[in-house]
Every structure is written in C-alpha cells, then in structure tokens.
Length: 266
Image 1 (cartoon, rainbow, N blue to C red):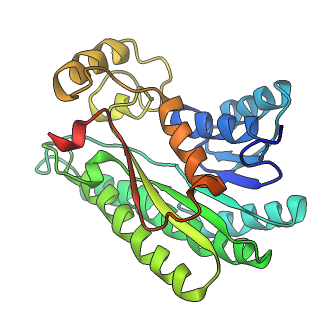
Image 2 (image 1 turned 135 degrees about the vertical axis):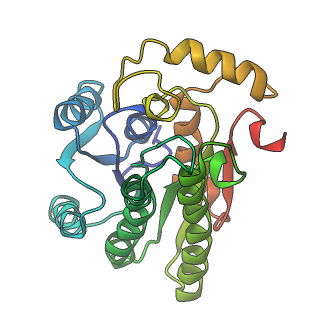
C-alpha cells in the first residue's frame, strides 16, 4: 500500500530534534524523500541515518535559515538530487523568554531573524522549485499558540509567531491568485515537550536535548493550562503536518492547524 506522501520530496528545517525530527520521520515513513536541515550537524546527520535504517529515504544538509545564500544552496541541492520539491516544512525556530524590559534588542532581532526571516527566505527560495513541476505542493509554516494569543514574558516570541501566522495567510492568497496549486498553511503547537522550552522557561542549557527539569516542568504547566490536562509529543504535531502535506488536505489553504490540547480556547 502506497504511503500518504509516496514519491513526494520534502524539505524540513530544524530537523535535528524535536518537532522537526518528528516531522521528517513521519513524512519519510509515509513515502516521502526527505531532506533534513539544521545547524547541529551531528544530530541532523544521525536523524537522517536513523530514517534510512528504518527503510526511509533521507539526507541531511547544514543550514542557517537566516542566511539567504545558504537557502539558495539548499534549494539548488534539492533540485540537483531530486529535480523537484513538493513539501516545505519551515520548522526551524528559537524561543527566548523574559520581560520585554530585560530583553536586549540583539536578542529580539535574533528571534525575529530565525522565526520570521527564516520562514520568508524559505518560501521565497523554495516556491519557484515547487512551481516548476506544475503539480503544486504544500508549504507548512510552524507558528505556535503564541501566534494566536499573548503570553506574559513572551512578547518577542509572540511577535515572531504572530508574524508567521499572517505571513502564511498572505502567501496562501498569493499562490491561489497565481494558480500554482501550492497550498500554504500554519501549524500552532501548544505545550509540546521539545528542547525549545529550555530557553523559554529555563529547564536546561540552550539547545539541550537533556534538560533535566523539562519533563516535570511541562507536566505541571500542562496540567493547569491545558483543558486536556497533559502535554503533547512532537509526534502529535508531525501527524498534523503529514495531513497538511498530503492530498487529504487538498482544499485547505491559508488555515491555522491548532494542536494544543485546548490551550488556546481558554
């Protein structure tokens, strides 16, 4: 039986860990040829190798999503290896918490550069290749529940994820007007156990995959803040991304897929 994205070519940024890795694994398991990118080369290469061991097709490329030249190089590599691009998951992101009074302009700009400019550059450089085949495609931009509602001590992060939300809608309209059959949607995770929390609420070192207090801290937070009463897993987000990447969502564009255990409705 063919997979739900069988034969498609997918590019997933920030794919060395967390939600990005889960998305890459899920897409590969359903038949996509996946290109993973990240800054952490050892973890990224290991993630691609693990997919290969499970029978999937995956490769890894180093990428700083804030560097336009690197975007051009990554898309050129995808074109050379696969000749097409059907799915773009703009997942790479960072989260910096703290009072707006204490946040430096440098940190604010860094967060906007990764979370917003990285998404812009991804769409700008990937869209021509997606249009090249004439078959359309799916662009999936990772936002957050923080892009839907404000949160104390997360002003910079909320600003960046809110920008991704409206950028997504604008590009969806642009693609629809062009008749290119490329759908563009945003995904809004809630409390999902990933390394990003270590720099938002201080549960470990920046980028660490072993924040010792993370699990317990997120359990406590989710039990109070989330109507369902528990935190999510990266696989929960990957399942939503797979749906948006597949033909099952062919009539969905400019939409917000919220996967948050009910957090945003409180």
